[in-house]
Amino acid sequence: MTQWWRDATIYQIYPRSFQDTSGDGIGDLAGIRQRLTHVRELGADAVWLSPVFKSPMKDFGYDISDYRAIDPLFGDMAEFDALLAAAHEQGLKLLLDFVPNHSSDQHAWFAESRSSRDNPKRDWYIWKDPAPDGGPPNNWIGNFGGSAWEWDEHTEQYYYHAFLTSQPDLNWRNPDVRHAMHDVLRFWLDKGVDGFRIDVVWHLAKDPQFRDNPPNPGWKPDQPEIQRNLQIYSADDPFVQEIVEELRDVVEEYRDRLLIGEIYLPIERLVEYYGKNNEGLHLPFNFQLIQSPWRGDVIRDLIAEYNAAVPGGGWPNWVLSNHDQPRIAKRVGGAQARIAAMLLLTLRGTPTLYYGDEIGIGDVHIPLARIQDPWTKNEPDTSFNRDKARTPMQWSADPHAGFSKAEPWLPPTDDCRTRNVACQSEEVGSILSLHRALLALRAENEDLRRGDYRPLEASGPIVAYVRGKSIAVVLNLSSEAIELDLPNECRNGKVLLKASTGQPGGAVPQSIAGDEGIIISLAGTHE
Ligand code: NOJ
Image 1: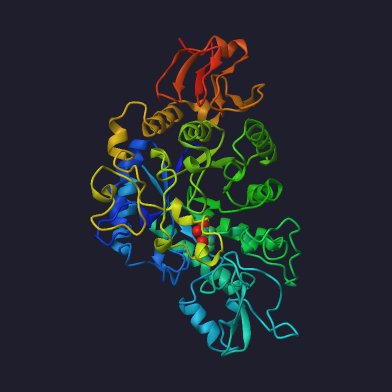
Image 2: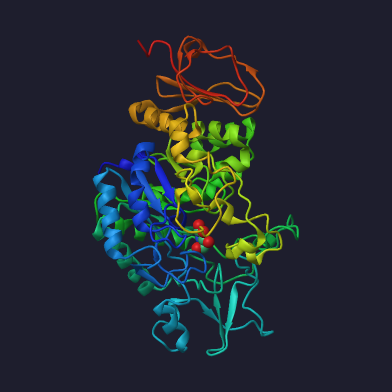
């Protein structure tokens, strides 16, 4: 076992938006294959693809109608095989998105399940009688708004869907469902994929008694409806740990495969997903940096709290952005996005980098008429729009940013003629060159990958730490210059990389400029 993923940087691709080769304005597998060199030149080690399986695309692929087929929008199985082979040839691992909590209502399993109450697949989904008043069986709300229960006229029962009505939840308490899903994993593992990111894994087991969720006292009507109740009973039931252990057993039938899980829970619940004796997920996704305000005190505390919570033998990981969240450059601004990149790529643990963050894609204006996200369409406040994090990758100053010959499904940024891979590759000090430099340093420096993490005394907007025996990192999360009071080993060291320039910086300064971050080679550890 190599546990390659401890040293790796994962790069998430949203396939609809990476590169279109078919000319329909939507990205495809052939496009991803063509652009693998970008990932390699960036210095990432593994690619995670959001779903590319057969789907009616009501939730853009997170509603799967055939777990073993590629959607024609993206290509076909031969194209997938070619992509996998090309990734491996270039030394890249390929991870797929496994969406086990729900299928599409167009899946053959659901068609059978809803056909009659005594169909053998009836129990593959979650069917319940109405409450005594004829309404839904309990008060659970769908994550995209509205009741999570849908009435089925034909069989006169409700079915449960944690997301869209067209995404019925599978019943993971049924062993046949589990076995069928294990075989889905084996199908892709047999092809040679290197692992999976598991969608909403904490949702897989619900309260067996289906009790009402308690109200959330802090909820306000302009917030997403799902937050109206506390999600106590609708997810994270203890049985989910058994489900996860079984999934782990399946990947253990193969060599060196990785299981990552998408989990939005407080830290103490999140780390449960490493499993007893680390027999659960290798990497339960850590979204702390996404969910917290960008402030020195907050970031210092959350790093300490998370590191302390990761169980012995478990390996940490960090995520800055993904396809469901506002982009990092939107959240913290362009200058601080560089500091965030330096943080992500120097903390202890596997980083996941979201496509487009390496060129600093920030806010994108999506006209109302062009909104695609089904969740946004359900909510009163359209400023919260996942489309903004899913816009086309910007490759060049060509029309449509070099993404497609046709009008893309979502618009690129207004500054795409200069904010693109071709321009930034030429530009000394671009955010792209900073990412390349950070990843190159991480690749060559074992302390940055594996070294211990030790916080340095810091206050206000400064976050500072030592990695292993040879490296220190000092980040200024504000735009003001700040006096530094560093220990001698840092003061007498030299600057290996500055966030503002993406270049080495000579002697360690006495104060750090605003929006600056430095990586220091400690005194006595360089010639
Ligand atoms: C989480 C995915 O990341 C999100 O994009 C999707 O809408 C939901 N799961 C439902 O599958």
